Image (cartoon, rainbow, N blue to C red; front, side):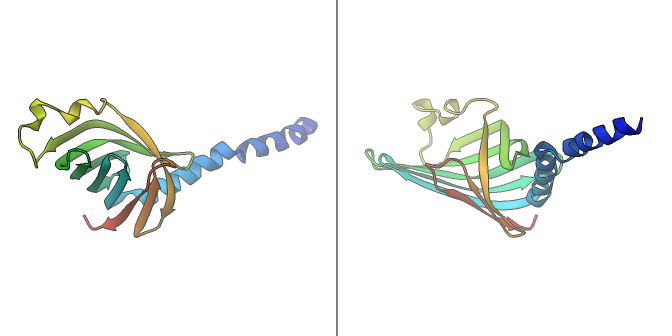
Length: 162
């Protein structure tokens, strides 16, 4: 019996120290640090124009989030700036150190050009239950910096009071 324990003990200890378990606990620690209210902004320029948004996001410990803010898109060729208000809610979590969110109810409305939805409804561009992940570049009590992908600028968030 003792020989089996001596043989099984290292296997058991190795399993307890596996990266996936450590990753799980690290992810839970990151999630605890994210819970709260944040003011976030993002700007991105491209040959056809630019886009940017500012939101107030609330991340709850139960894995839910809400987001409200504004979205501005500039189209160079048409020399038009379109301004939208947006509201979003869904779920969020940290998986293997990445921030992952899934939108369940995303709404966006044009406020700069009333009636434009008759010709182009931007809501049709966004799929239902869209999901995305971002790399967490920085996370402190006051600041969170996320990178959506390597070809886009960083999204900067500052913690705010409720």
